[in-house]
Length: 158
Length: 287
Image 1: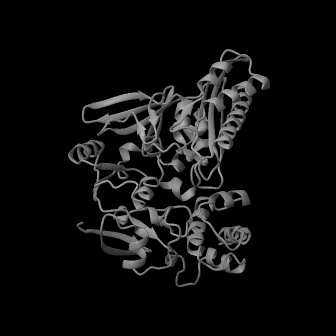
Image 2: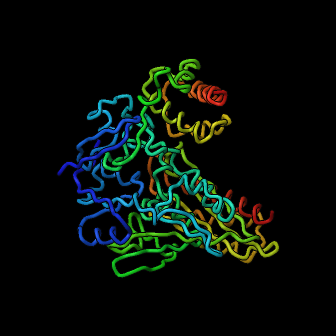
Image 3: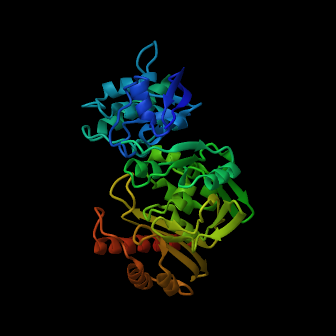
């Protein structure tokens, strides 16, 4: 099958790739663009480890074709930190022990980052609903909820 | 897991999508893709052509048009939830959308895709039956309007003809004296319903003027519990009558046994979801 040229913004930089139509966005990110922060878990859009932002919305990149990102704007976990250091959600996950094995963490961070833009001052229940597309098999979620709450407070003060 | 090979076409308009469908045999429409792409990964679907309609802004948006709400088929679940028009005039649809999948999937999943896909676990079909919705369908021969009641014919089988595209969903504005209920049992966020039941009901004083009871995932397609509706219509609804209606709901169910439960369990859960939705609808219609 003929490959197609796609071009999109990845963490602020314009990138190009040649992809088969059937190639999934997560594979382009990891294998062609060497951005391996975005993980592959269930591959059936349940677990959320492959969560990225596409045009300002959280999506599961295992269930988006790479050609659908053409002309778009993608944010992965690699785009959260800047020259000044880690993003507030990353700091909060460290402070509140929001991770153990770390496999789900990139998806959690990217989702938490977007969720706090959608809802900057959430209740615990709203955090649980907003983060419900991301599974964690270690923490029991308590510390993840605390981390998102703590990041919300820090971002509100900023 | 990656899908099999296919040729990708990004449609530039609805007419273009229809032209592409008639030009290519074995083509599938790509809406949100969160049912189709997983099926393609598993080779349950192997279309030779995918026609992507995600770029078509003419298929998006929610408009109030007199007594009717017009919803573009590519409106996402999260756009349904955020819609003030729906919150005010059709809250059943908002409550149902909140229980579809998870936040990320709701950014991609569309009402039209959910209606047209054909999995009995999809949530909107039974909601469409309860709302007495209409579907605007376009094909090479022009446009037609089809009632939701009669649209769902079986698993992956509906009244869409070859080469036709669902473009708009029309639902009536909920009037005063009407109430709705929506209850869905699922094992976890992101799972299909073990059973779900949307109910719309209207009262004339204390008497039930009309009622529609939808059922999700307990038959080859979304169905209405018509015998239960007949029992309640024209009556003052009491707990005893709800119990009799629940018996009729169970008689209407023919679920498939799977990991969500056996036939007996699912049948009883369908009845319980219907009981709760009837009670909720009654309370809202009275308030």
